[in-house]
Image (cartoon, rainbow, N blue to C red; front, side, top):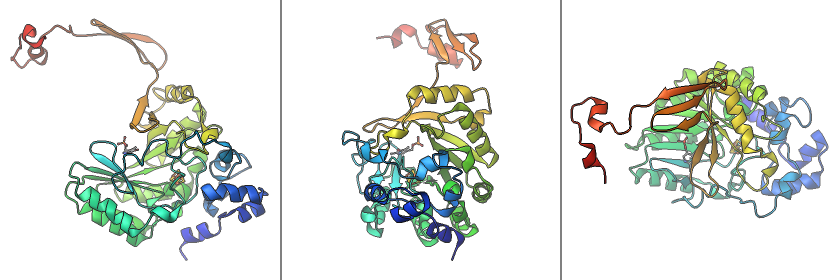
Length: 369
Ligand SMILES: *Cc1c(COP(=O)(O)O)cnc(C)c1O
Ligand code: SF4
């Protein structure tokens, strides 16, 4: 058996094993697993150093998952509302989210898609085909985010089939794979899988690391294999209480990611998903983290801090206040050290043609209402 399959088998996969391994009440485990399954593969399990640490919190079920009342939505981003066919969310003009699997290498207790992930009901080859058909008949789609669940948990031949179908659509320019595998089960990134992926470039991978202790030699090897196959790798991190809500931890994480050729892309403010609210932090924390990164370490290492708009509406970036004031004459700016700088503006009343120097000066009066 392949190593990654063995690691999945040898992990904690149900409440009985959770009880045997950690003494967590089996009845509680059963009730939690009814809504969202338990899975910690043996590799990720090996990263836990002690109960309650940043690795543990991400994957070991917690009774607080059951305490969230019904006013927390199951689908806080209204992904179903923007869904023309079962596995697609078409929210932005030129790109779609395409869910191709219900399984993951671990089941993260904070998952925003708990309503679907780990539940096999919605997933089959017919619904996959419906998604592919939708993309084929919708020419404005030029970028596909292939996600789930985790696409890399599919067998090689399924990954090959999905990528081949998508690449055969002329208007599809970019394919992105969203996967936690390079972090949570890096052994799955086999040379064979990389060989498949490289047939369908341009392919991007956005992976998901949340803590510097996840950046191991195994994860480095997985990312090296992908990068050597020509895949640019980004990282989408979720900001979580007690896991990574600390500028020093985040700085170590983003620096370690760059070293394994992973470019930090987003830090997400936690969504409002039912059963995950105990992970939420105040929004100021994310801004504090960005302030602690921008200027203080490589710009390449600084991700965008975003909130996915509740109810659907897309990702909204949040920035610390670098613009102190902006008026007709100048912009007053604050740099990363807090020093103030003044940048003089060109006069607003200067005609468009004169600004660009192209000689087609339009009379300003003619442009005004
Ligand atoms: C995040 C997301 C995307 C991709 O957004 P980018 O900002 O381009 O990375 C596309 N569709 C949906 C529904 C998303 O949630
Ligand atoms: S890997 Fe991603 S989709 Fe899967 S459980 Fe974790 S956060 Fe959810």
